[in-house]
Amino acid sequence: MGFLVKVSIPTIVVAEDDRAIGELVAHHLTREGYFVRLVADGRTALQAARASADLVLLDVGLPGLDGFEVARTLRRERRSLPIIMLTARTEEIDRIIGFELGADDYVCKPFSPRELVARVRAVVRRSCGALEPISPTLHLDRLVLYRETREVRVDGDVISLRPREYRLFAELAENAGIPLSREHLIERVWGADYPGEDRTVDVHIRRLRMRLEGDCKLGRLIETVRGFGYKLVKR
Ligand code: CA
Image (cartoon, rainbow, N blue to C red; front, side, top):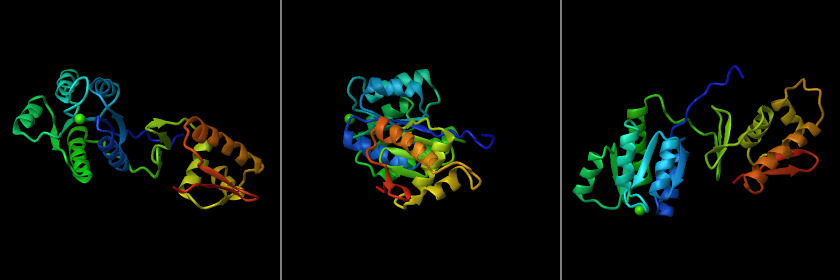
């Protein structure tokens, strides 16, 4: 516990009602190590930004409140929150309105994900200083394992795991696709001197399956290798 350093990971609210674009942006930002909350209308964007956000990516044409309206409200409430506007409209007037409302940057559609990520990085670096993203160790669709914070997140939400469960899952995840014996897992997770039995591993695996495959509905994640041990399904 003494070695556990709390690292904060920038949370980015992505407000985009075009599902394909939203998911594409979320995918690229998650890969960069950011936590992403994807929302599809202005009011939800406002709520998400108020709850927790280090940066907001705001589509101009949103249902409910439009992006300009959301930006104006946020600027009033949280002066220093970075905002990047996304828009299909390229007219200079929109750009000017965006900046007058206090947008930190402006990206026109269509944009390349690489360009967008670069702009996000630049704005985060400028405004948050220390809030650099950390590299997630592993992605399995909706699940991300963060080695530095010893967290497992599904859709951005932290899954509460006991320390041994986390270590067991991390060991499997870092060797995804490779069968690991119960002896190997015990040695790595409980230590070579552990006097317990192999069944201990099974009990912990069962709980991991309940949390991840059951509660989080991640599908088949951990496979039993008969007479040997377990492996994490490679995706
Ligand atoms: Ca839109």
